[in-house]
Image 1 (cartoon, rainbow, N blue to C red):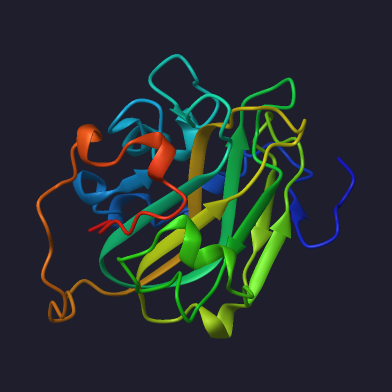
Image 2 (image 1 turned 60 degrees about the vertical axis):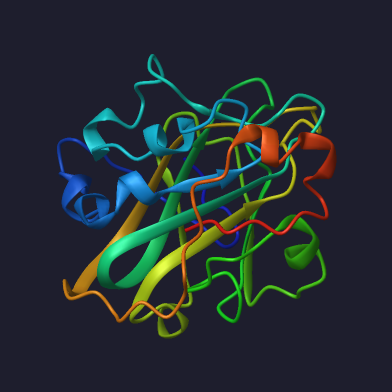
Length: 212
């Protein structure tokens, strides 16, 4: 497979060379606390995190945005401090996968009170133009020095590859190492898990939402 600017292509058999050992942060994701703004089915965001060998299995629940609104904001907490080296994103075929991933250390990393209005006005420290990766052979390297000691990530997917009305993501994987399993002291007071009736789709762009 050709290499794309800003991403790495696996030009070997991933199972034969056991790429699963590289995507070692799967077990460090605090899955019950994963949240997503604008997901069609509440809680479906947790299903995109799975073992590397199951990354192409799209038979179960997948993360899909609301109709006529492709934007997704995915909050991922870890069970300790991690050093992030790369991200793998597998979207749905036919142009329904995400076209861009934006991450900002200042606000997107280790921050849990984000909304679309907030992230739209910020210049990310790193972003990737994503490619069609339905075969699961492309990953996107981070500027590693900016992703050390990370306790949580917020991933912003603003649009689809085909310019469609809805985004679908089947898998997200993180390549890196766990630095410490000890959680940092909690500095924020977490609100009760939001209910759909409290956050109507029409109000998403301006609504502040606690993701933790």
